[in-house]
Image (tube, rainbow, N blue to C red):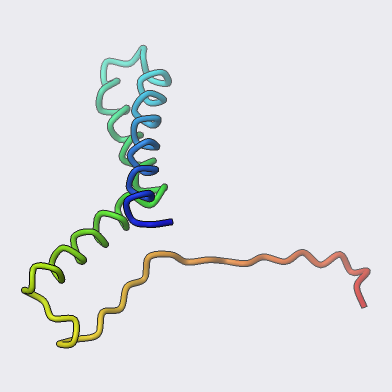
Length: 91
């Protein structure tokens, strides 16, 4: 998924989180705060923060202020854990 697609997906998730936060906490006097926090959580969970940081880094590289050859950029944006179940019937 490209950066623009990921950012668009994360923005859609944030809008969904905002609506869900309003629905979930509509009886509370702090409904706006809860809805904004829910939107931020969903934005970050769906990769919005990583997409924004990647876009900012790419913009700096394009502006000529940072030369890609000057240093090696190492970014960690995702971690994956693989879990396998063993039933005990395998060889």
